[in-house]
Each structure stands twice: as C-alpha cells, then as structure tokens.
Image 1 (tube, rainbow, N blue to C red):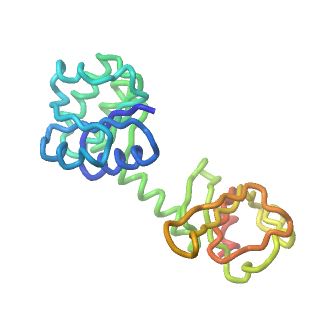
Image 2: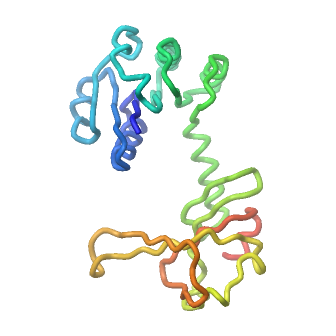
Image 3: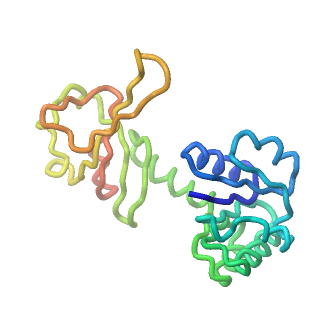
Length: 222
C-alpha cells in the first residue's frame, strides 16, 4: 500500500514509522527540512515542501496513493487549506487529524468523513480498557459490544479448554488465543495465534485471550 503522511510531528512520524514497519510504501511530508533529514532513514521517503503550495503538492503521487493522512497538530488554517488542495487534486482518500471542534465542523462541511480526534479516541480507549483490570487491549465494536484481549485470572492457568465454556459461563465468544514465544527463551517475542484451540489445549502463563461480547459480561472474568 502506498500512503502519504503530511506533518512529521510526534503523531505523524509515529504513524509513518509504524506503517513502514508493516511493509507499506510511505512518503513523509513536512515543511521543516531538519525533520525531513532527521527521519529520512526511518521511513522510505521524506519530502520537504509547503503543503499549502498548490504547485508543490501536484508533485506528490496523490492519485497513486491509497490515502493521504494530514497529521498536522497545531495550525488549523494550514490543515484546511491542505484539504482544499488535496480535494482539488482529486486525492483518492483523505484522512485528517482534528485539531479542535471548529476544525472538525469545517472538515465535515468540506465533505471529509474520516476525521481522527486523538485525544477523544485515546480517552475512549483508555476508559474502556481500565474498566476491565486484566485487559491488555480493547476495541469497541458498537456502543454495547467490545473485543478485549485479556489475561485470565490465575485460577485458569493449567486448566484445559474443554473445562472452560466462555459462551455458557460468561456470554462471551472466544476469537482466539495469543501465545508469546521466545527463541531459546531469549530474543524478540513471537506471537502464536491459536484460532480454534483444541479441547486438550492447556491455558498457559501469559496467554492472552481474545474475547467478544458485551462490556458488562467481562467483569465476571476479573
């Protein structure tokens, strides 16, 4: 996948590096030459240009890119003008970081449907996660239904899967088990995903269970 990240601040570069690590073709864009030079070895391509310069923007491979992410975090005016230029140049997909409620309103009026509010989304994520003390990662599917990756309480360790019925006992659906492994007990962690564990599969220390259901049903697993 080819993508363009505009704005190499803390969020922009974190996003660009993560996408690069996943094997995507990333172009990082910023008007600050020092940032462009600093991060040139961390992502595949970095370009120094003024995103509000229409002629300069035309040099970017907008129509060949799967999406353009405007990750600017301070200048509302620059972000809005960048959106206008990208829409004029018919960028395939535009995703924008929201800087304020007014900024969001303007973006919606411009027809932007993918707007990221980092502060609000992290607050939602953190609140959802902390309600379940043993949750490692959480994802809200709807207002009522969530997915939690959780470590089961100590009393589950050593039990076989045939003795655990998540749907009957907790009204939760098991999506799989993430089991970490280290080569020779050392080195980087590799994650094995067990999608359909056998009945004689034993729950191990550090297993992470991926479960789906209503948020209030998870509390019984704490």
